[in-house]
Image (cartoon, rainbow, N blue to C red; front, side):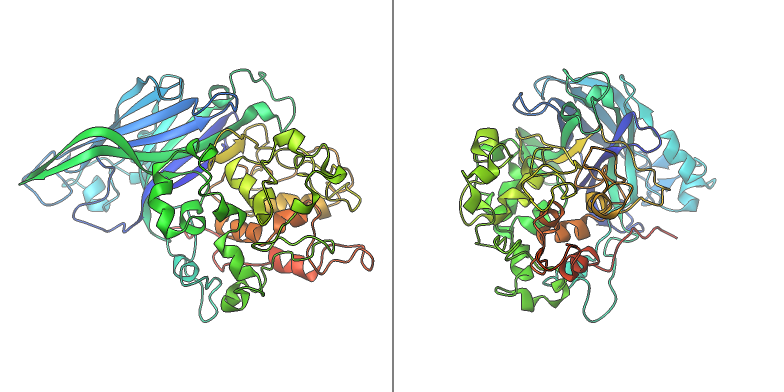
Length: 515
């Protein structure tokens, strides 16, 4: 499964949330084409208030499959669809305690089997497929727009290279988008910001990083506890059990090790508050082992441009097992900052030997606050712990892994020359180097502040961004520069190590559309 959440570029008063299930579908995978499962609850969860435990809003989808003509093996014939799937949408505004039906008879857009099946006289006779898909957009009771069906997977990644022990970009051969021209099953919602924002939020944001406009989004699938098989039939009973979930992309694929994946899928983001058993995988991520020449860096040559700071500003080591900024704990240097126990407790400096507690852990578990030192190095005058230029605030600390979005951040127009699939990474680059933005430390909109990991747009290159983040690029953005920067000999922190990280590519940087 996968998840996206972003302000809608065509209507910025709305947020689009897309959850996808069952990846790697062959579009021609007959005779039983893909659809959603019966006896499954598909849910999209929204948290908008850190003072209230758990979700505030939940959308629940359940499906029913009807065989309209059991006399044929064709999926569509003579106006009938033999995997006709309908759905019910329920909404909870009290965290899942009660639900009300807001759409009773939605229709899953028929699978695009082919032109004869879709619009010929012997098929469904429903006309142009694109027009049919548009007609299946439904409006619910609070003007929620809903669409359910199959679509080309918007994710793009060289699956073969990445999982071949990190051979990305491939050292011998061209990169291959492993999900190109493959379908996924899609649940898409478009919801008004007024519905999603915190109940006590002002009618309009106070500024473009207003904390009351932050939401956390996660998706899940649940099944009945007991499945009973008999000759020719199966029945389901028992309590509903969560079997999968997703918030931030690639958490379950590239951060959580295989021995913990089932456990991770079974718990909620809110369980992660008290259950700290998964935290070490973020404090000392496995991928960082292959970006450190003192560990296993030489074993993964594709990651050669990605090297983590071992002596940033001559003092700070963020490689696995090192102390990062922990040596500053309790000192005057961090007083009043987010790293001060008096501000957020031990949240960001929990102990020694947990170097990424200051950057990767909050990005995945709490969001990043607009509190010193989490601003760009612009305006800091060489002190990474000073206040700088704000560029992110999606702090929502009452849950764990969620896709967090600040809905107050304006939309970057898709046709803008500044639009970039590198999301917040590119916003940081512009804020540090572009004279439109780096001449002041005042808050202003920088293009792509609405990009991953502040939400996730369809175009965002999340694989590349997360690999750059593991290699310390966020630390560099706030002034903890790479090892080859010596302020005594150079005025510019734009060093070769930084350039290597920023120009790193997996070889797959955009979605390949069906021809």
